[in-house]
Length: 227
Image 1 (cartoon, rainbow, N blue to C red):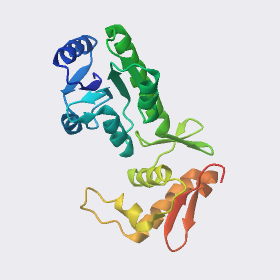
Image 2 (image 1 turned 30 degrees about the vertical axis):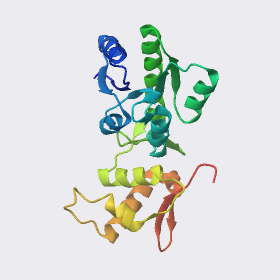
Image 3 (image 1 turned 180 degrees about the vertical axis):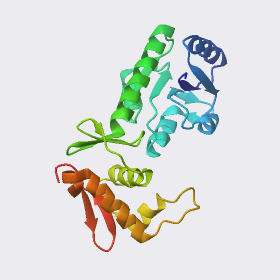
Image 4 (image 1 turned 90 degrees about the vertical axis):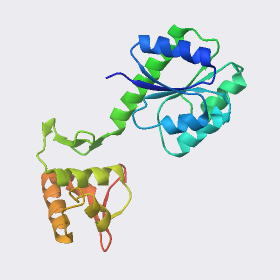
């Protein structure tokens, strides 16, 4: 599957030339010539953003800040004719991952793109892998391992574990956990069933069951490392 790039550039000739080069390198390209258009085209399928600084309806710095405020961690590479150090520092300080000065060489740009996407995918894989005690949980695949051996769990048990790990250190109420166990909104899971799932999960974790703490009268939390 080809990586998808959102290119936000209002220079038509430059955008067309860059699009052709990127497609030749095997990328899918979505073009936008304004911040408004970029916002409409930004979704979870985008792997990287090429962002011009000066745009008809605003500046790329503001758009970058807005993206980061929303918690979106897609790699962003600024493209700008303003190559002074102060501009580069400003772009990187607000959350951009790289900065390429115009006019740029295609090979340099594609190399920067490849490096940033590769780094992003590695970071995402690490972020979605949780190690605790003797166990490793791969959140995207819903796989729990101990000493490199798979631990058989039901999907409900996996969903509970994922919710606790993603929010480790924070208390999740019983209602919050119950919401994770609704089967497409059709099946109702009661409070007693949740207690059974927690017990089964703790049994399977063995000595590492202590990582899941009961907060009386509220719910459960997954203990942070070092606490």
